[in-house]
Length: 389
Image (cartoon, rainbow, N blue to C red; front, side, top):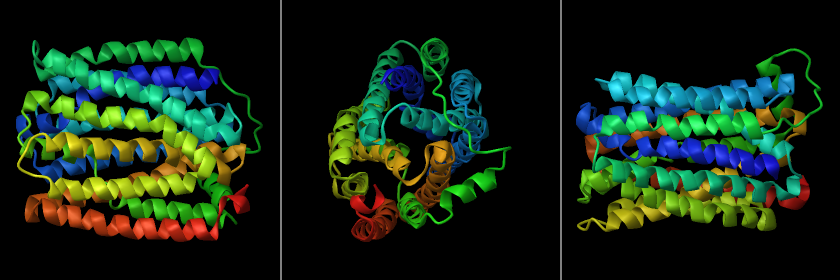
């Protein structure tokens, strides 16, 4: 568990840095830089798509070279350097470029980091390990918005972007000093990302179906930015939006470790389906609750529970389907599918909200999520845990 805790601590300080920004960034882009909700969705979706594409590349490379840490370090370093540049943005294109730089860093580190966590422990405890990592990680996501809220009382938004450099730099130092590489047997000669992908999916029908189901859900899942915009519509003052974001992250943190333990006990696919269901509930609450600013915190709580389950379990579900030496590629491919569909979902959700209203956007998400839940139910019936172990 040394690497699990160490990488959790690195993620804590990185999330401290990142979440200081993300709690205020959506309103900064829309209000200060003059972007529409559709453009906000395109920025978030595109940035995440870039991130997920780089997860595929770095994950496959980490398999090829049998090394994880160098890619993790490059990713955390790039994210740390990128975020302060939000302080000098003058338009939404500038903001997109900085956001993309930060997300490229996340893409470089995520698949190798998840593979290193999985390499460090037995498969039977992988849910617990990812739960521990996610919980430590998310503590930073709680502290970050709270610090941002406090700083907003004395400095402006652009000053917060500069301050974010400090916890990011601490994360990089801890990564260099504490995290250790885990030796893995290389069975891949030379680098061919497509060959690696072929090795992962060939004859692996359950994993391919899981990718398809995850992609369907990805077409429904909208970014937390829209929850923060809804909070603003409900009457939450701009300076209090970071507190709404903090509620999302508190719920995320509280549920992360229990969901990992539950996934190990009853099956990771079942708990992932539960996460889909809670997202469905949070989507419906977006249009059901109105007229009171306190409802923003209810919506944020439901959405945070969904995120905590999904982001813990969707990483823990992968190792069962692939061999150790191809886990980086498998994590990358899984993330690429999620990122591609997430991009489409965010652009569509923002467009529908701008052009037809929130109820149309939410109805779209509800319909697609329902299809994903039904598909996952059938998958679990066809491929119970006993057939995969």
